[in-house]
Length: 506
Image (cartoon, rainbow, N blue to C red; front, side):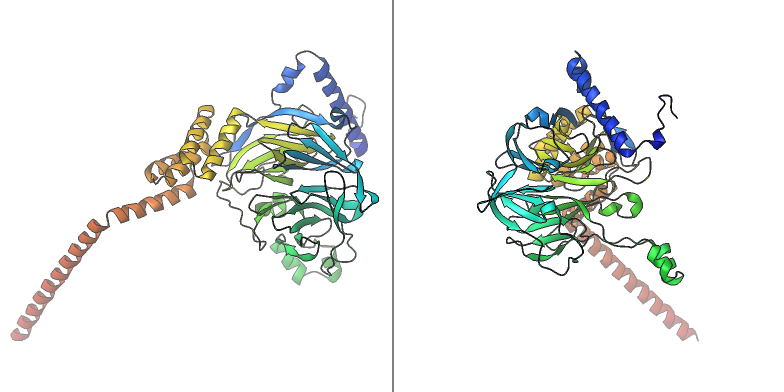
């Protein structure tokens, strides 16, 4: 028993969740009512950090600050109920929120103001409705909704008219005992639909524009424990083997598509399972993983955690410039990487203060902001980049566009905020390397202890030296060759004379 008289070990899980909700409501009320508490909440409750080249966590300036926390009540549409997905349609500036428990799609503008709520559907003249939808994707064709409990994918317009409906794919590759429940989806520029379905672990389900099954794409690789495999194969009975862990691919947890039709996916497993290096993948048209991993460590979220299990990655969002962020549900954090897999920043955490999360499940970029759904607190949190965070992203974006001078200027701004930023040194080194200033590039890579980049710069510098000095090197080599040839001739002549003298003496 604790001091408050509550036996915490015996408290039911639901009761714990209710207590958390009450505490959060109290804190929110205090912040709203008490003067000065808004200023206190404005200071971020987390400590931003990043990992250096020695894999040590080091503090860095905040890349993002909490802009707002939004509830259904704030929009005048009643509380959210288990919200589960969010999608930003950049061409129209609209945000689409899947409010699963209320079986509705909530449309917002880029300022997170209400546009409309879609609940009732017109399905060819028949009144229809969603049933616990879990995913949404929007393009010029319409709004694609994973209507999970109705076992279908709907394409609707903004007035709720059903444009098309795809039910269970006609294929024997999905076992009949598995109910078709689409959970997440994305659509490429050719109309192909990629689906994460509940209970389907063979990869993404690929459908054509008419909902016909095409293939599975990018199944997770199976990781084996060698010791258990040998024990299972050679020393176990059939009954013991049946009780052992079954090695099967793991379902994907999150899904996003960039503007080049590459698919980003996350796997909700930790480091201890052996899937760490594949926790995030970038799939091409064949389903091959082409994610670049040139950072100090793999794209896995947190390296060190209390339980050693690593991050639990549940969603991913891709920015317009090749930057992508992954959402860690177990620790409530967001990890952002550039196109090469360099970790740009980490922020967030678990808690009840403004800006912290309890059970984050989905995220997306809304312009420069990051919006995260917390389906336990039934709200969405909007994070806005700071001057430091904008400088990091602008430097990365300009480098991606080929504006190396602009990128270097922004990396200098980053160094003004954080003089020990390995990230800025690597960024400047990459700029100088592209400008063929390999000596200065090697200098900056050495500051950041970036061995891979240093080796690349050194190799290119050595090649340039060889090309620039080839006439001299070739001339010297020819002269040395001639000298060696002459010396060998002289030596051979001497040896010949000595042999003749020795023969005559005999």
